[in-house]
Length: 213
Ligand code: ADP
Ligand code: AMP
Image 1 (cartoon, rainbow, N blue to C red):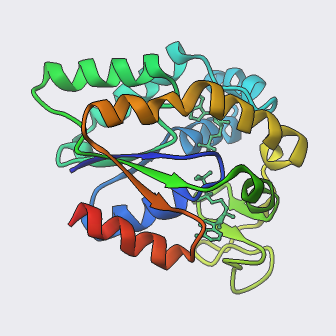
Image 2 (image 1 turned 90 degrees about the horizontal axis):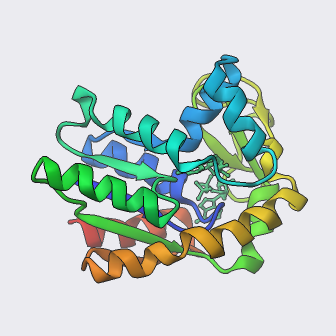
């Protein structure tokens, strides 16, 4: 099963994608996580991506598309995957579509996690991320067992640089201009399904599993 998660930054795509990956035993592929791992390891790609990420802008399609296509060509993606944070532009979606068509495959579901803008800044300023294992928490809604420490790997939790309120507003503008058109793109392909992302994360997940079966 090949699934795409759509939604504004902070809508809960990553939270749900991790749960989907576990239930359906498919890899969770997050371009944001791949970029953050590269930044942490000081790679050339990481340094290039950081210039854009810190401003709340998208990393250019040329860089992003290659990374994603390489990742989904790996053996563990043979039986499907859940994409989180990709595609974010129409050209990215078109490249993915062409690559899949070439091998006789297609996206099965594009799940749009719907959260209005007014909820987003609060979501993101409360998000705490583990840069080691990729786990995410929320200081009010989904707190870790010990404040500031990752439940999964024990590393320190941080407020991402791009989750500061001034950057979040840029990211929302970028979302509306560049990413939201994908809702029409996947509606036209007949694979778009929307869920209410404002309810408890478990209820969002129930709605998603009803769609995925
Ligand atoms: P995205 O991957 O779409 O950017 P995340 O999954 O990282 O978003 O979620 C953003 C923040 O909101 C995180 O701090 C997360 O713990 C929290 N969150 C996710 N889903 C919910 C929910 N249903 N209700 C409240 N907070 C949530
Ligand atoms: P995320 O972790 O999905 O919120 O992504 C964090 C940041 O990484 C985004 O604000 C972008 O700067 C960059 N990024 C992640 N995925 C993409 C993508 N598909 N296209 C362009 N930039 C991306």
